[in-house]
Image 1: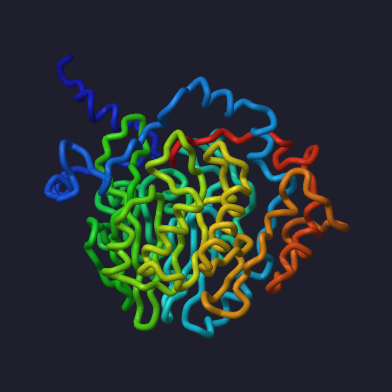
Image 2 (image 1 turned 30 degrees about the vertical axis):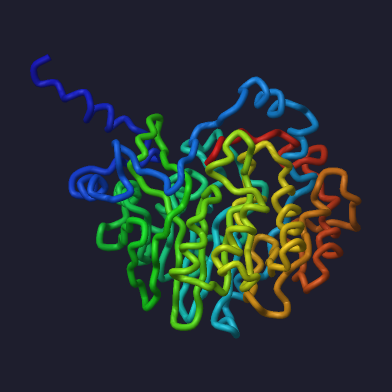
Length: 419
């Protein structure tokens, strides 16, 4: 029809805001020149299946099995640490402090600077506010109360790592974003000015506020819309200050490249390693706790050095395993290897290497069927956990039950495969 708009721009205009934007122009040209881009897509460092494998019939049997569905939810509300902001107001004695905000979100205070990894403050990791995996615990602190951060680091563009409501709130600040190549297209659509973006290919580095940030390889995939074109990159990250070095895995399957990253950038004072949402149906793109521990050791040159913080678990249901299984698996892996781990309640700050690093399995009283504790004031009333006291402290809230003993009335949250 004469004067009608071309179909592609009209369809693009109807695209939901949460889907973000496809790279174009100079950004797309840079992607096409990347040594990690071939045949129209970004390539993994080691071959990986990015779609579920195996029998979908068997998958469905497990997914809908009543007992297993129940075990994917906690038996009582998961607590959050009540005095996070008060503790963050004090500078870390060692110069390095980590605060796990849940899932893969971590606030790292390193050598006088603040870096926020994969912040997800939204209620659901989904493009829609009415559907998708819902939080198993509240955010530990309001994002606006967290104070200024020098850099926000994004590992990739899946909804449980790149959250539209969180990014739009951060758009009103002056923080700088370090993101993998192509992800900047999403952020620009959501109001982040191009001069606040540092968009990196693997093994490229940038400096922000005196810190060196390097995008390093990972074994995963990307995509937010209905069509996954694999034209935004995924990455793990190395952040180095004058005195400390840390590593954030993002989402990744195990691969030999961890040893290479460790040789080039390690050893690390702390690693933040994905150990949840794994499955035999997608073994190449997420790590089990045992694989996560091996990655930590590889990064440290094969020696149990530094502190491993397990991430990507306990906040959203994204796989078929029980919600607490990644934590238990990490405890077992640490016992086998002698590696140091940190097991904080969401929002609990700690300094890697300190004598009081939280190391108790705080989640056990919240597993369905765990013995209940005494009177309950609710998650916000959980007092500070001292080393060795997590179980006793957590038992005070373990008998809290919402709508018959399960969070959100025991309704299974919709799950997202391989995010």
